Image (tube, rainbow, N blue to C red; front, top):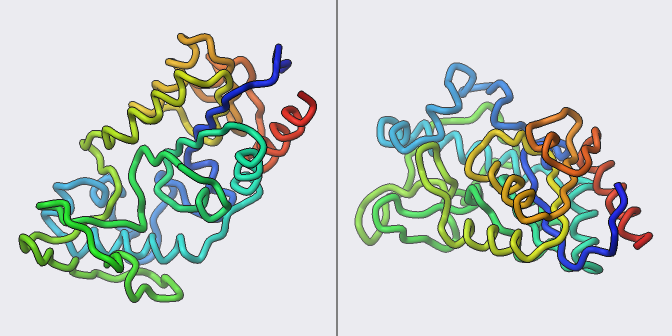
Length: 248
């Protein structure tokens, strides 16, 4: 793919494949340990939380412990390096903090953040955040844990992620759309292109005439509308992107 001129503003949209190279299981991977008999969809909705808050809270605490044992991969580090030399906005569908730990700033989290929580009733937060307090160093097989009650209203704390059936945070979604409307290159990394409304962002880019690159080992619906599909993993793809931009 040849860029007619150096891009002034770049948007990088990342999905599960971005963090898979850091050892973080994708949502569609089989569950293990205590959670093996459950459908992930049952653990990622308000109805499931209301029915069994200890099961859902315990699962997210287990995932948080796993996340804290992972480190940013070459792709995360490469994107952070690009932010130091180019106007790059990072939009992620991932709930981990690996972009931030790699050094990226102002990351837009469309689906919330795993290491944060809030009261399900009034939205109160707490410092230190209870979802990461006293986490086991080794996640093990997980355990049931009763979520703490809110001091303000008595309702339980819930994970700070977007569950099935919930709308994306308005501020995050608007920031993503604004960034896309202002950019001249969209780079999509490791996303299936199936989860809405995030999957509509590349479609919007196409409509706006923004050039797009899809980095994914397998073709996706995004590959069909992108200007180029690079069939490779996140780390290799970001390195190729860095090399391409260095020549501009």
